[in-house]
Amino acid sequence: MFNYLANPTRFLKLQAAVQPWLTTLAVIVLGYGLYLGLFVAPPDYQQGETVRIMFIHVPASSLAMGIYVFMAFAHAIGFIFRHPLADAAAKAAAPVGAVLTLISLATGSLWGKPMWGTWWVWDARLTSMFVLFLLYLGYIAVWQAVEEPHRAARIAGIVALVGVINVPIIKFSVEWWNTLHQPASLLKKGGPAIDSAILTPLLWNMAGFALMAAALVLLLMRTEVLSRRVRQMEMAQVGRAG
Image 1 (cartoon, rainbow, N blue to C red):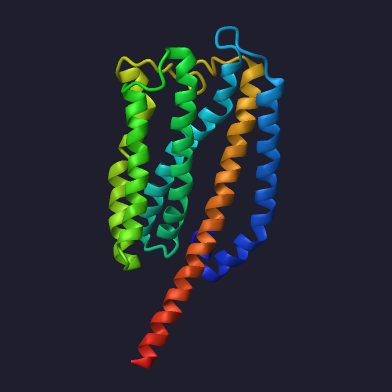
Image 2: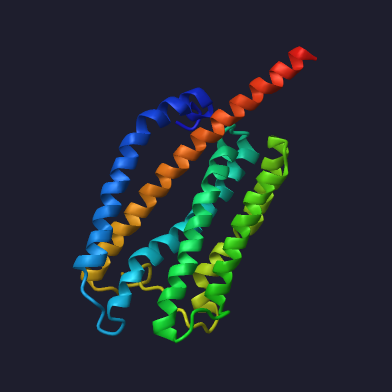
């Protein structure tokens, strides 16, 4: 499959076949997850109705970090194996990750106000998450600023690979430093410390967010591949005219 998808034409055919099914599945799973989280899940005994922010905040935060790791991995594949679509996959994933990071920051602020009494604090978790947002913006800016695609891919790849060190900082910040942010309650020793009435809709929403992100990345990858083809044809026409 790795070598099969190295051919852009094969990728476009596979993407066209998968896209409708993936998008439909994402809408169904995410819709059901939001229904469970917003209307079925009980209020928390401490946080009350504000706990429902979790069903958007946690999936967005997890995927924001996961997508950046994916971008770094894709660029590593591009550097090592010269896979022609690796940098296109990373470039397509960046706007999705940036939006999810922004959602994470916004919902975290909304959640923090009733819980902490403030919209924002510069503690380790929030600050490192904000740094992730800046890394996304910087990565996207490289692609916009550098016109030559191969050079842009190299510079963007360096940004992604260097910036990925921020992801474990985000993950373990609540353990390494004193922070207002609560410690991990989903991925921890002994299993999740969340009641099943809250955990079930949370997992549905995490799956829905992941499927929707995958659908968007595939769609943006298609746009990127087609735009590169157009650029190649334009350059070929300029060459023949010259």
